Length: 174
Image 1: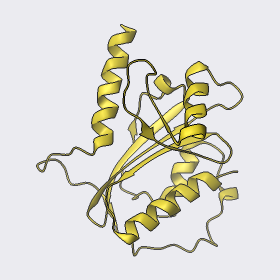
Image 2: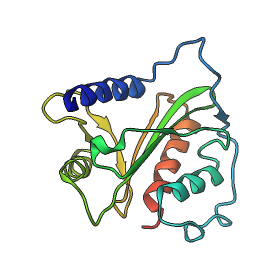
Image 3: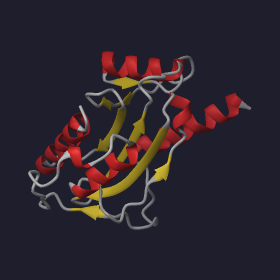
Image 4: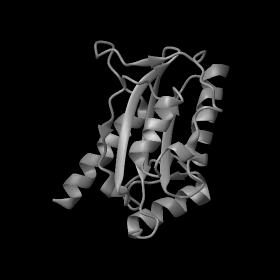
């Protein structure tokens, strides 16, 4: 049963990270790269150090659209304690964001492996012996959050927005 569940999860994550969406699917919520926010008014100290508040922080920064609905991920497979996925567009480019939370005081074997791989390689494999895919990821400065951010656009504004999104996650309660 565990092998079937792991195989299914591997398939789901592989499909999700490739950015495959049919043209007849629902319209994704979007953000415009020209939208801005006064970063002096939004401080991480106004948010608790948990996944829900990190997501609120990113929404308040307008990095995640306010109408984007999170999808609960199978976070246990990578040893996380929580995880959500967001799908939206940035200047008409599909963006896929997955954010996972870890209990840094109590990391299981899977969590230790994933975090170690990300620190070493900037990516990880979901299953060490069966998965040939490396998933690029970023780790927050406090080691509590893992971020996967996929935007295949080479538009300068999209590239800058991705960089700023990653910076916001890395600096959240560092």
